[in-house]
Image 1 (cartoon, rainbow, N blue to C red):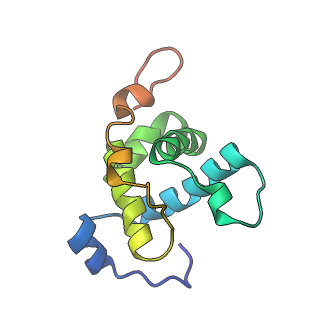
Image 2: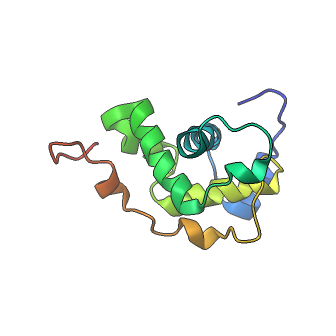
Length: 130
């Protein structure tokens, strides 16, 4: 994570529960990946790069598989991320810190049950990714 950003991890933990720094950084990078995938190279207005909670969860799944392959679910679990709701907690912690913006329509509920991790991280031959 950038040395320029000072994060009060105790404050984050009190409000959102424990979030590992690795998971935090993964979501930050995964957001960039998702925006790039959905919108391409867009410069300028941040509103033109908005993604929904569901879109971000799907983008984070794809980014995890791209980064960690069959170990994606295991790596995320090691960081305490075992369901899409966890992505929402991380995103809203980032919003609280001013590292991300949200629209009036964005809600924590947008991240609930987007997909089941066991089903989402399955290899093409049907074997579990972990």
